[in-house]
Image 1 (cartoon, rainbow, N blue to C red):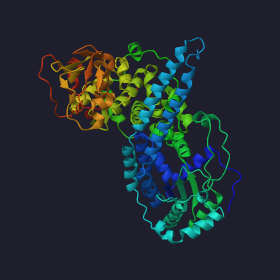
Image 2: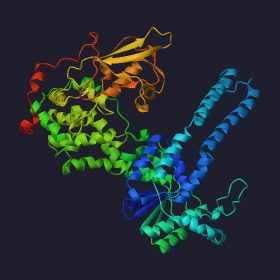
Image 3: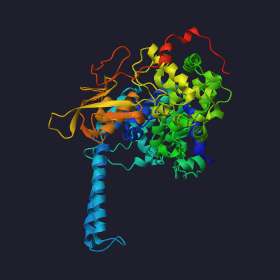
Image 4: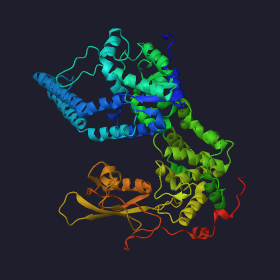
Length: 622
């Protein structure tokens, strides 16, 4: 048995975990405490956990005893009851404080303010606490638990070890516990109650089940994900001293999760496996450092940190729309060349392109610096086709969710006027291809968190032929998008139709139109497409509704004009009203002269229809 003296620091441990999890002969086992924690997290974090777990296929397991204990807590509504109890305790403490302090209400307890000011402040706190407690009690436990249980049911660990052990468990467990042999000996004082057993041998059953399975699968490494930080599992150590990146993430870190040496020894001699323990804090640290692009939300809740604080502090920027008009260079990329660049943007990245994209997967501090300072110098050596492909690849990742890729593309687009005209066109072309196309196929609507930023640059002279090429490509495939970036930046008018005959306040919203198209439909069942869901309320003013409609369908908000009422007018939103989904091969245009068709293409645009990018050779980049 090896008793460690030199212990790993957080940096060394997360590297060890990352390397272990990447190895095909590593098996991962999850205990109940970890899944209880997962149940408490939000939908996005749970979704990211499932995606992370899917990478392990049949190497990640939920033991029978984990499921059994989770079910006991589920049947007893442990998490729901605990949260309600804490909320009631919070309210009771506030009530007690209020009763006590009200006796002093004739005093000016706030210096320089009236006697009543203090009790007014107490009233405000009281209202806030009641709102918070009500919000806590409204937590949808059923939705969260069903999500976790559904995932557990997909993970079957076929072993009867827990049942086989029960005939000798009392004797074996008592003997182990009397000599402080882990795991679980700190539970030896638990006593059975008339209505509930003590489960004092639960950890031992869980442990024996894992050892039997690890031996059968010949696991070289066993990773147990647990929040049980008692010293009958973990080696007792001091909290590590951290600085730099680790200090920025979290001021105080729990000890690195080294296993109890007796546990590690038993696993080694019984199964031939190295034992690693992983709690949610260091699981989050591993994800933040090595898998942050895909799992930032899950990492953030595990570490208990706000991802927003790690985004680069932005300098006050000049309006991009103003800067776009000031480029002195003429467009140097022709229509035919723009079409070819956009075609090449959609191919798989080659070596030089992938090397740039891979900089988003480096250590966290390196990625943050790259994302914050990204600019023309980072693409030296890439020709126009490669540059467009690189920008398309980076935007694909940026569109997947918050993270360094999104920060990088945001800053890259903000510096578009620092690129020479031809290279600015390639950057823009790459972003456009990711936003409006999925490979060779057009998207039903543009997909980008940066779409409004991109509209700011549509008047840049460097990108005008790219925009013409985009319109040509979208027309060629009969695209259903409602708005295509336009150098003229015309007004985008949305018209509201409301039911003024019903005696209802606010007036009921009936429809929103853009360019003759009805954008909303009633009777939707998809929660995520409902207007109430997107807005987070059942009534809103016309400006708010116009903004969410524009974000969904890809309309330029800064060019938005509202008809059918003042932008501050409120409208009631029907319960099942939501966004229409358009397709490429048909639309229900409203035959109403009040709704003019989209702006006509100019003569140059009509001539573009004769071009076919597949019929032309590439021009030189020069």
